[in-house]
Length: 376
Image (cartoon, rainbow, N blue to C red; front, top):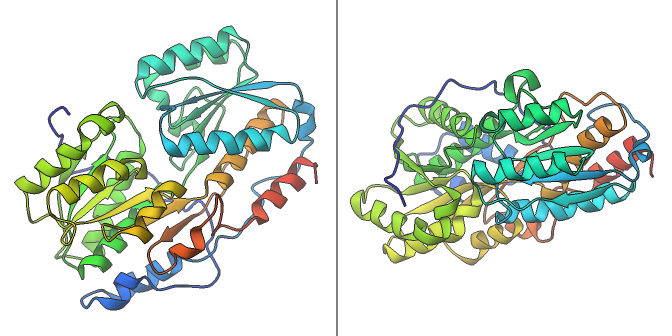
């Protein structure tokens, strides 16, 4: 991997808007319950973060069947990212309920592959284009071409905020609760280390949510854990994940043995980070806290002692929400301001409730969307 980029101060904070309302049966995390030195406010926040999400209609109902026969192109940041593979399958099933087809373009994490994919979508007269984590600011000319061709563009995995600010040259966003995710990851690190976390942040420079995560994490540590520190920031380009990520982690931990938490913004990194911790001989000292809640990654929490927390976003919920924004645009319906996708923290104390594609998030949101689309 290229030289690690270390950033100790984030960009200006994005507006902190929780994307969902959490409620249900609370579970205190095992780490918070067993370690001294953890503020009561952290324990309470983690218990709240583990509650079952509730579905709230994001907007009015509409006749989604008017979109029947149209084809939507999906341009993700990389077709090799596990969470995107799963989401594409789930979104395809949701769109099929009203007769809409989906085509996923091949991408490899580079802006060049995104440009090629969008140009192909325009050439094939796509009815709409969905960007999955693909940074709009890096492909403005292609988005302008799509707008000129009157092809609506939906930006998924967006930061909270107005479309004009978050993603110019797109027609709608599907925002995720990244600010709250950063807060919860920080709280889990505080709880796991008893208020003595020395954290290495691991992110992806091409993604806008990087600074949102870091700002939220820094604020939470300053507020609730003065003894906690951020050791640095490691940039992890997707192209390097499988080739050099593990050795990079080994070298990092050897250089700085005081690090006791690796905080990966994207849990697709975990499959390469955990072997690095093991090879460095730090599996009893270093823990991993992460975000996204990819089902295959959650297995790491129950099967080992390295990954201690993963702030999950329901892949199915997000897929249906993205389908909702897409169908609204395809039928001439005004898109909603916020789909209200919630998050949920997974730790060893409740990981058993996460088994299955959408376990732990309920199914009420599916019933809700079917009613909104008038297909129930």
